[in-house]
Image 1: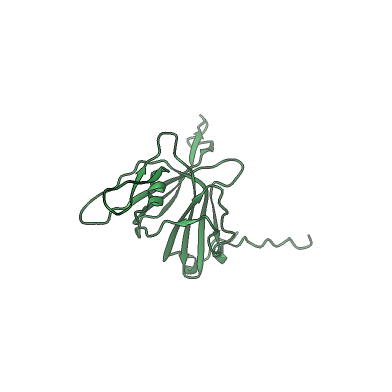
Image 2: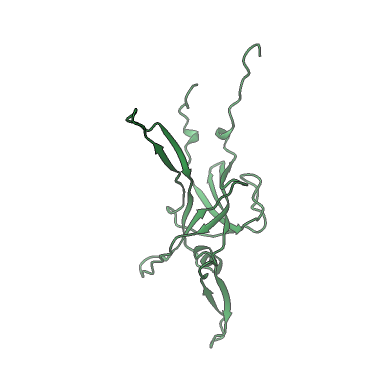
Length: 201
């Protein structure tokens, strides 16, 4: 089988990225360019170099006396995570970063409205659906995650000389009844190869 040919059109430079969140079970977009369905919320501005999608499978190896190399390797686990630093402080973004929580209006001495954010207690974290949108010119990609959960600690740097960001770290959740994550793209290079039947078949 012939290998890949050199094609600089298949180099992706993410000129624009967006991160969307929704309640688990919200309708996912049908393709890579359709408007996001109702229920999806953009997190807004993010730092330009923080967005990452990580996939880290785990393997075990069987070793035998007859070989210096493993004689069998099998996968035992799969793990995927989303990392991004949010620049916009808002109630919904705080809930996403801290894994849920409650926002209430509180009585204040001045005429302004004041709000109280309370992080979730142990056992109170909620799962959310996520979408990473990547655009490179006329090519569009959407990483769809039906279920994810914030499972890391939150460290917010409150320095005087730079903006304070909210670190969103989502761990992909899965099950045997659905895809843990998938990508939708309108990139022609994703098209499955055309299988030509053998002559005389």
